[in-house]
Length: 180
Image 1 (tube, rainbow, N blue to C red):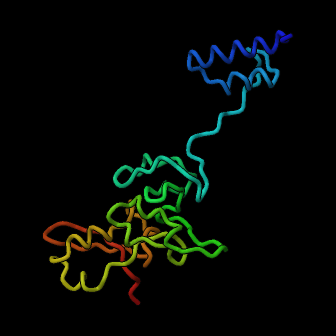
Image 2: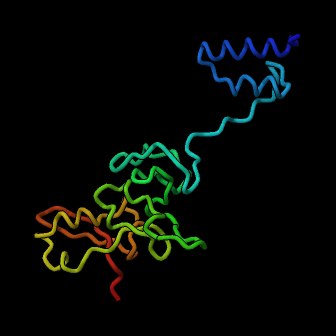
């Protein structure tokens, strides 16, 4: 014989499935023993966007849509190449375990800059522009575009400095090395 509580729960579950209601929330209120109208509220449901480093993910948007790449925890992006959470440019990537440093960074999320990104001394970052591009800037405009810092942040540059090159009246910020 089925108990009235179990039968009521089964009916509630069927209604939730049929009408697309949020089942976990409905059961949380019933299981906690809080009557409706109580001053105590249910704990918040887990937020979307909390996958840890190395976990599978499905929001692998690339440049220029990185704002929508938000299913991984803070400081991580869903890498389209591996479909796993990897370290974003400008975020710390050093850890105590041995691993290939280029696999730590979400390189594929940065599109054409992917081959310039690696785990530097402290963070995932963009390499400094090659000296030959600096020698004749007007012939290397595309190279200057590739070496631009992410969101203008100095932490995205491995060399720790951002410079600006003027070419034909346009200003191109780029990652460079410290010059002593």
